[in-house]
Image (tube, rainbow, N blue to C red):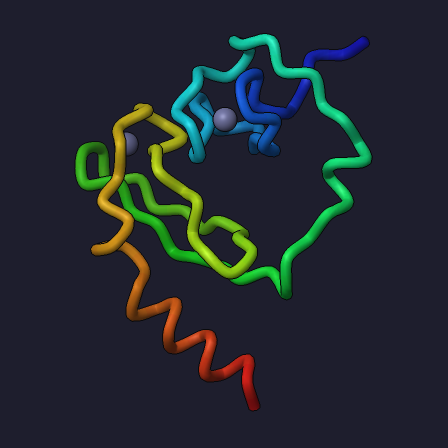
Length: 100
Ligand SMILES: [Zn+2]
Ligand SMILES: [Zn+2]
C-alpha cells in the first residue's frame, strides 16, 4: 500500500505540500488512523472554500469545509491559526453569494 495522503490522526486529506494536518496539527505520516471510505461519503451541505493565513510563517492557503471552517493548523509549520480572524468575513460574503 502506498503512503497515505491522509492525516494519520483524523483522516483528513492532506495536500502533497502539506507537512501538517490543517485540522488537528498532526505531522504528515504520523498517527495510526485508518481511513474508512464509508465515513468519507457523509457530507453536510455544500462545500465552502475558506481562506486561511498563518500569522507565523505567512503561508496562505485555501481549505474546503462543510458549513464551518475546521482548519486550525498551518500545513507548513504546524502552528495553530486564529481562525476567527482568518475567514469569518470572507465566509459570510461567500455564503451570501451562494444564496443567490
Ligand atoms: Zn488530522
Ligand atoms: Zn505557518
